[in-house]
Amino acid sequence: MAYHIVVLPGDGIGPDVTRAAVQVLEHALKGQSVEIVMSEHLIGGKALDTYGVPLPDVTLEALHKADAVLLGAVGGPKWDVGPGHLRPEAGLLALRKTLGVYANMRPVKAFSELLDASPLRREIAQRVDLLIVRELTGGAYFGKRERGSDAHGMQFAYDTMFYSENEIRRVLITAFDAARLRRKKLTSVDKANVLDSSRLWREIVQDVSSHYPDVEVEHQLVDSCAMNLVTHPQSFDVLVTENLFGDILSDEAAVLTGSIGMLPSASLGQGIGLYEPIHGSAPDIAGKGIANPLGAILSVALLLRYSLHVDDAATRVEQAVAKAIAHGARTKDLARGQDDVVTTDQMTERVLAHY
Ligand code: NAD
Ligand code: IPM
Ligand code: MN
Image (tube, rainbow, N blue to C red):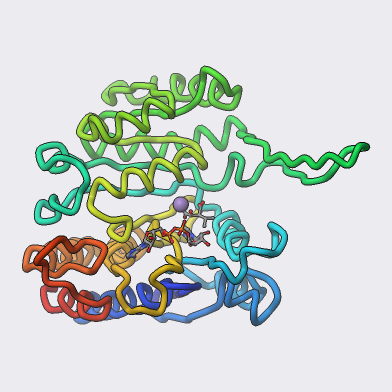
């Protein structure tokens, strides 16, 4: 029986990095007993251009028989005008909600050869090895929202950060389980000194932690956590937090590794996994052929591991990326001084050559 993979390249550099990821996926499955069928569909700005909506019915229908989804990125200046529900990003949010992928796993690990690309001192950067578990289908992204104007014509807008006990509990269980397989430390990040949703979050952490006596738990406020991520990144193992805080902290954590182009993600929940690099459509470099495909390629490793259950192939992809880097391949975002700068396609070839 073949696995169905729905491929959604999206906008900007999305198609470039997705092409790289698909090449690596096909290569990794040669000689494996696992078979896949891939189908490509529109999402985001391109879907708006063709269908007038960012997540069209044809794409939604394809999800019914999907086992996993591989996504590039959505968005761009062309579509930054319309109302919220007619923006590329709304398509991605609807996709996450439809798939029920409430736990977004964002591993952040420094490659030793890339330490010079990190803004941190070498001795600090080399110890970066953490996993951000970001709640993905709740919070301010999905709470009640409105835009309007009052009787005096004064405009207002609000987005509510809503969380139910169940939404918090299920992502915490994913995070505690992940901590058990790592260094058994969990940092829960919130703003409990101000927000009620954070105070509820903290209470549920206390409750869930009683089932994981082997996992050390600490709580941090999101503002000082942002500081600790750059001053003491080695003190983090699993960092779990709500949707918006996780979005911001993961971009911050990404630069510790040298570039946001390096970071993969797996969004897991009620069955089908969604795999995407954490970066966006990078309009400033779109069409130039220089995007770093490694975040997308490392997302393929996560897809192989979590959705296709071929752990050996996943590890080989990760090792091939490490070897390509060790042999000096650097896309422009990673390059410093005399480095051997390669294009997106050349980086992909280097990875394939080391697989
Ligand atoms: P971005 O991540 O697209 O880019 C931020 C910076 O990082 C840019 O300088 C860009 O060139 C660089 N960069 C990002 N990915 C790179 C890669 N693979 N290789 C080399 N450099 C890379 O964030 P932004 O500029 O804030 O957002 C641009 C658009 O992307 C917006 O429309 C935003 O909504 C969208 N976006 C989409 C996703 C997604 O689809 N998952 C994620 C983030 C942002
Ligand atoms: C990400 C992105 C998205 C998010 C946007 C494009 C909706 O920034 O995947 O990190 O905020 O979740
Ligand atoms: Mn983001």
